[in-house]
Image (cartoon, rainbow, N blue to C red):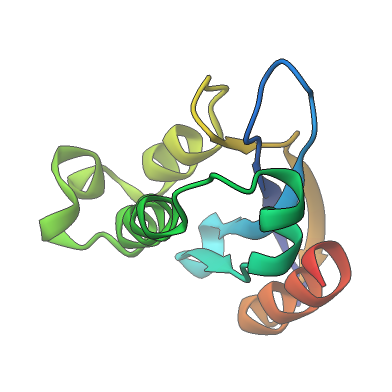
Length: 125
């Protein structure tokens, strides 16, 4: 039976002033399936075109931290210890950092892993 899931696209915003964004990942949460995952696909060439001086190592570290929070990794700090739903809301909350989540959308799924793969392919490329 299909279950409800929520997702948001993660975007890198190298310069708030310019308003340019690049989709780099997705956050997918399916409460009843006990599922929360951040999946990342970083297109470094496109990022370099938008922001030649962007520190890609720092960006990778930031994105890895988000994935570790989603996974509940104890090395990711206090937020990673929150309940799965609370971690999802923290991950998709509006922020002014270089990585921002887009609006939250909903859907139905039977296989959350397949949803992550599909959304990553369709929305991030």
